[in-house]
Amino acid sequence: MISSYGKKEDFPIFKKKVNGKSIVYLDSTATTQKPKQVLDAIVNYYEGANANVHRSVYKLADEATEMYENSRTNVGRFIGADSNEIVFTRNTTESLNLLSFTIGESLKRGDRILITSMEHHSNILPWMRLEERGIKLDYAGLDGEGHLDIEDMKSKLKKDTKIVSVTHQSNVLGTINPIQEIGKLAKDNGSTFIIDAAQSVPHMPFRVREEYDFVAFSGHKMLGPMGIGVLYGKYHLLEEMPPFNRGGEMIKEVDFHRAVFEDPPIKFEAGTPNVEGAVGLSAAIDYLKKIGMEDVRRHEKYLTSMTLKNLDGMKNVTYYGPRDVEERGGVIAFNVRDASNLKKNLENKNVKVDRVYHSHDIATFLDDRNVYVRSGYHCAEPLMRTLNLSGTARASFYVYNGDDDVKAFISSLSEI
Amino acid sequence: MYNDEVMDRYQNPVKNGKMENFDVKTDGASTTCGDKIILYIKTDGKKIEDMKWQGEGCILSIVSTDLFCENAIGKEIKDLKEQDDLAFVESFPVKISPGRINCVMLPLRTFRRGTKEK
Ligand SMILES: Cc1ncc(COP(=O)(O)O)c(C=O)c1O
Image (cartoon, rainbow over all chains, first blue to last red):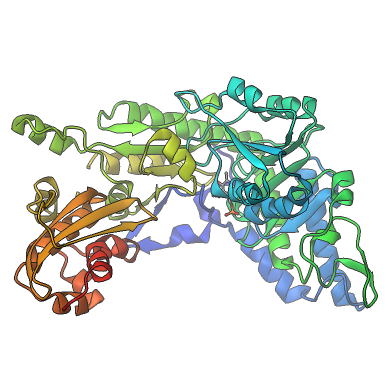
């Protein structure tokens, strides 16, 4: 089990009672709860050091700038990168859009981009927009259990494939993709390799590697505040790229018709940045480091295998994604068949035997029991089409979940 | 899952099915959850003579649609269209959380968009 950090006591929201009972939060894939340590760090920043960064010469501004830049260094160390390779953004979505509007702009008609059928919309739409300019978007398919089909990926990796952008861990199936292997394929092909790490950096040890050109993730999915995200990029690539937004902060000098841009990463951080967010994210990283990312991963595997074992015993429940917990994260998408209807239909010899409850109905049913799961398409409609599903319910775990949450989830689910 | 009234209607809807000689056909969808319905309406342009539906969706949208079709019979198009959203949601047999209001509203919204009164 988990160390003393990661307990519910550290997370003020778990003091909240709804209808007199505690909440069972199983939607950390969407966003995570925040420990007191993160909230305190934000308050301390505002109470002790708030000023605009990189601008003024007085002491308070120095302190604010130092806190902001120390946060950057801490994020860099956490994934094994230099601090000048860490660009602060709003979230994963903005990190990927930044890439679309910089390196994406340099693509030419006939060039191709390869993604997978299990991407979140935020790793689809920034690339889809380039199709208007005659750039082709290819999707690598999945096998029956929801693994990436590597052979299909290889066959779609063409001479003209300039960008390969892949999610490290699916936010629906939980599938963990072999990004080192995919990275090698991309590099052998001369393609730029991008990782959507929104669901991996928060949940497992992650170090940048030679094959990884860019990595995107969000602070709010790893105990940090909303509104702060990260784009890691190899320094020489960041240097070659044009800026994304333009304005204050990101320039060295400005003439009436000419500007010299700052060096990366500041070149990509136009305007007043989210200093409170950076400070909060840094505190979240400190918190995760105290647990240790190996233990975070181990804990989630433990909760996931316990849950899957229980779901295996429930005849009316289907779950998706790899069966082996080594190949998946703590995200479980599932559907529930209407078993009462099944009996009734059999008696009536009705044809609609296999009616599946809509995921919103499952989520509402669980909500009445204070068990909070997500339902719908999970921002991955192409994946839902691939799986031929009109949505799923989804339970997901993080450091603060324990056996109690799994038990509450399973017992509520069995009441359907 | 919900109360018996809702579940009974979900499992045995009374106005589900295609209508052959309809006067108005209109469809609606809730893109966030994949609910899709078609309303078939028999009307003289003022009053509803009959209404049926086809489609798929969650329990709340299906039951709301089935109830809407049944309750509409004999009513004026104008009155149906002008009814208050909140009152419509509150008249549903179970209490609806804010996140599910769109499910219950689907038939009324579809009806409003698809019908013109004479
Ligand atoms: C795999 C994946 N990519 C990208 C995102 C988008 O993250 P954000 O909304 O923080 O930009 C998410 C969030 O759900 C995700 O799960």
